View (cartoon, rainbow over the protein chains, first blue to last red):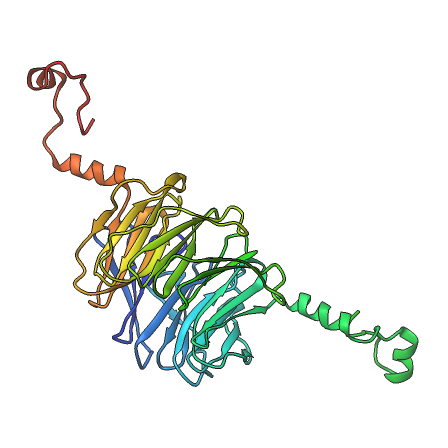
Length: 194
Length: 194
């Protein structure tokens, strides 16, 4: 279960395959707002994006589902995130809300771009664990930790620019304008590690 | 595992009965900072207080442990929280960092006052679940949710003043100064629901 950032809405993940939203403004009398269906097996985890506009759910069915919950009485289903080959155990949004990490019993972690509430393209697949992943957590600054039954926690750097910077630091000095003109004539000068 | 709020420190909970702290400023090369021992069985969960100064760990041994981690290289053990009669599954700090909730396989949730980094007095014991509690989560504004294998999520209001206000609203009108003087002579006037 998870509270929305404003504390007024609670999402619960059910073994009955549903996700339920509750208005908990008055803790004495929670009011049911909506029942979200779609998962074909128990729901393991739910989490809100930092701004509270998107809810993600992790399923034993191997999918993660997204809902737009700007109005929690009328959640709108967004495209389902498919690809994991075993249960999705845990989810974590990056602090900027643009990336969702999923950890799965298939041993992988996947990174989904969910900016604008519409997942785009194939996820990045983070491989390395040798057994089930049961927990994922973003820190501030783009670091992602994943915990596995293989008894390791792995750290991943998800900051694209920082990673690109390292790759370029390791690569040969960038092509000069003259080299570019000689090797790639007719193409505007735009060295990859500029 | 859990990141400290500043994102520079990661705490990991181990099946080897230890909690480990890592400097993860550089995700490529996490540096071990400390190994926290004391639990006599696997560690189920770790969580940082909102200000990052205290780390709490939940043990299969039925205890929760607290460490002062202002300097994560030199964690200082604080008094152990004992009372649960089965594994502690999950922990959550209230937003103000003064209360820690523990959920246990003994079916109860306990609330510990941890202000000033020193747990004081006996915890409040929240009973009602009829099977193992596996998750607890504070929302903003003092609401606490607990999830159980009994297929229910329970909500608890932990705001003392709000609860007291309700009790007083249900109670008889408060004692007048004259009634107080008649019934409790010699004691300064301080009606309980003043």
